[in-house]
Length: 286
Ligand code: ARG
Image (tube, rainbow, N blue to C red; front, top):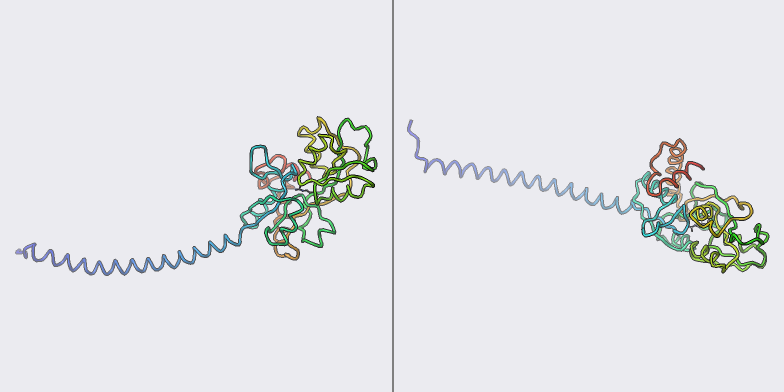
């Protein structure tokens, strides 16, 4: 068989094939590129939108252990409320961002739209209900009087008449202190300052939430301080959202109910994150 010389046939077929192939390849590539661009475009913007909506900005005041605090040397917000906020956020599909501010700045921040939810051991009161919408209650608390151990005079709140009382600003503890006749009430930005002032004998007593005082004493505060009298004012903690944001409140309540159910049968590990032992124990006890 006589073949045409390589030099004539081969370059021709190669040229022909490569020409068709080139066109095909270009066509396929542009189809792929177009599809890729379209899907990337959709997916991309979709994702961006979702992320944008899906951040839950949570406000707290973190001198309220074991509910919200920062462990020594750590910037992370830890404690029961923080675990709860993160667990609720996860349940609802939000990324949780925690913001630190003064306790008395939390409600204004909600109403200014700077945060979406308050998780700060905030007691549900009639007064506050005028300004914000609360979730279902998630913890039952109360107030207690703390004095120095060497104080033999003060046995209950009744003995605080005319005395110096330290409280955290904007709290139910402050309201309570202001009902004591002739008391000199000093409202501090943080609970840390109030407790220090008692230790330094700058005041005669602190009025604060009883689980927080209990935790403070158990963590070493009992070297110098103690509680007197009974727990006062049964109070319930609620998560707060902007007044009238029933949609978010509804989502929160749904997540809360789910977590409570799981917490009660002790199978949930969802609350078992950062400050797990305390948080989990507190949640299960209630
Ligand atoms: N339960 C009290 C109140 O609602 C005190 C809350 C203080 N919380 C805090 N994170 N410092 O007024």
